[in-house]
Amino acid sequence: MTATAADQQAASTSANAPANPADDYSQADWNSAYGNVTTELEGWVETVEGAIPPALQGTLYRNGPGRLERGGQWVQHPFDGDGMILAVGFHQGRAYLRNRFVRTAGWLEEEAAGRWRYRGVFGTQKPGGILANALDLRLKNIANTSVVDWGGRLLALWEAASPTALDPVTLATQGLSTMGGVLAPQEPFSAHPRLDPGHHGGPRLVNFGVRTGPRSTIRLMEFNPQGQLVRQRQDRLQGFAFLHDFALTPNWAVFLKNALEFNPLPYVMGRRGAAQCLRSRPGGRGEFWLVPRGAGVPMVVLATEGFVFHHVNAWEEGATLVVDSIHYADFPVVKPGEDFRHVAFDQLPPGRLERCTIDLANGRVERRRLSGRCCEFATVHPQRQGRRHRFAWMAVAQRETGNAPLQAIEKLDSDTGQRWVWSAAPRGFVSEPVLVPHPDDTAEDAGWILSLVWNGARRASDVVILRAADLRLQAVLRLPLAVPHGLHGSWSRRDITPTAP
Image (cartoon, rainbow, N blue to C red):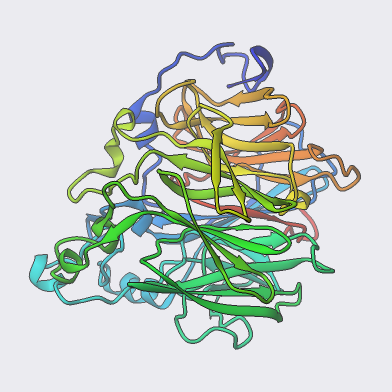
């Protein structure tokens, strides 16, 4: 595992790691992360290489699929797996680990039955074949996509349903949350909230829910730190909306409606999951849906071609909006019957960091590429959300071109183009980087990057701590746990560690 600034090596995690890892990887190493988690652990992390910075105080929360098999049947796609929260608390140079499954009503029902009793959005079927699955359109809230500490509760998020509340210290499931009566039962609440750092007088959690069809309804909601609703609006816009993420500025919520078609018939007839019924619209272009955070009418702007899962940041420059996102040439189709453990990466379109500049006066969009390297899960300093940022951190492929597993963390200076790269190759695979600001330094790149890394050599997970400024390695925590490749996490200043080791 190595780190480089431009082409120069800066640090490595092991004396045995090559300075320039080979531009290849083991499919078996990558596949090995997809085990079925059967244990819930709690205790101090005893195996630490390097030193945890004493100023790093708080908790890294992470969500992702943990239960991938029941009754001998594996999920069709890992995104159908039940959510499991990993919490790593840092206190006075030590780390404390907890992991707990999110015990939703569906999880409890299926655990008792010892088999799947609900279909999955990404193709997992109930036992019994087509006859058992046809016309059964119930969805289980799997609470497996993201997690955020807000309003005194830890919220496990899955965008097709309401959040599940957990105790932020013990991770015990408390049940579905209506966000203080704001949400109707099972109302969708996105798994991609944005934290407004104070554009309107104080921090806010901003999120949305979408009900889609030939016309789609977006409900935009803003909550203060106490969890109280302080602003909301609801808008209906023309077209089917597959919305996984959005960007935020002081005055706008920025959505990109991808050019997709949805044919529900195979899903209704029990032959496919709902996500397997999505297809790119031939020759279609998406639309930016620009929703005012206050009064006003949404703007619809024709976007360029391609597909976007995740946005990085957005900001306003006079009469223009600038939006940085991860763009794909096409929607990566989830095909029935494919084994998710044997992904042909070179046959999938890579994600690349690109910038769209939207002229609000004439609706013109200009797009340019910021980095040609395959990437995902990009982030900026929390205080730069909605403001122009200089630095972005993202998970990237080891190779410079084409698609491949994410094996490195990259810092990009968008002003100069300079890059710093820390690599876990050849046997490590990174997850979403989480930036933790330094408590005593307000510089944009002061703090640490935390990432959960799958260690193919020992078939278990590590937490890697990097210095945000130059990606020099600070510490590696060897967890006594194998966490499957997953999704999103967040940082909280909350202390979950016991009062005494």
